[in-house]
Image 1 (tube, one colour):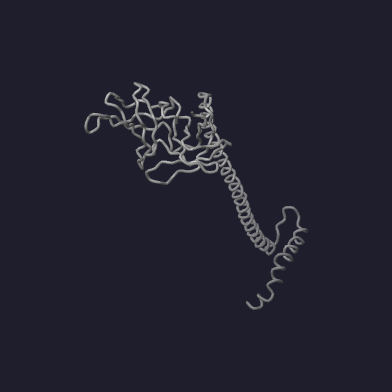
Image 2 (image 1 turned 90 degrees about the vertical axis):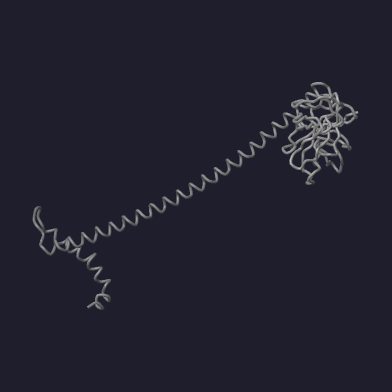
Length: 278
């Protein structure tokens, strides 16, 4: 019996889905309004109705799954587009912040030019830093055609940076205030006490000291040290830094004075070389 059904399953399905419905239609055509169908017709209609309902439900389920799948695909595409847009906006924000910061630094340098019209200033960009633990050297690249020479002073908007040590094809090494090889004639703005600002060469900071103070030269924490104009390297009244420690030495004859440079060398990006100091 089962083998017979398997062999004729297509015919049986065709009979159930096509022939019987046609027979029911034909049988129902002769009925009057309100007349009851025969029992076989009602039974066949119930079977077919259940089958059709099952098919309709299955099709509805498949349609719902397809709708959800296509909806998820569209949502995924929309999310990917939004993610790319967010990445683009973040990149533009980063570039804009960089431009604004550079403009602020350049405005400070322009103010320096305005405040000292007597200086001939050659702009330069910081391109590197010496990795020597104790020496403090910046590497700069000139942004003009000016000729650089050793010992030329280098400044920033906040004050003294250092002086040129070595020149090579538009580039130069700048010895910073914090370098132990640096010597800058300085004076206190408060009481005009004279001294020499020398780099301490600390590995962890950029501090310097004030040497060669006389026994009458008393400096206090908070005093501002500026260039004295002596020595023929730096012009007068350029800010070097602020005294952060001042105490008598071991013999209590002189002071040990520590200066914090006015320029933040760790963040320095643009500088000026003064090319016309006599």
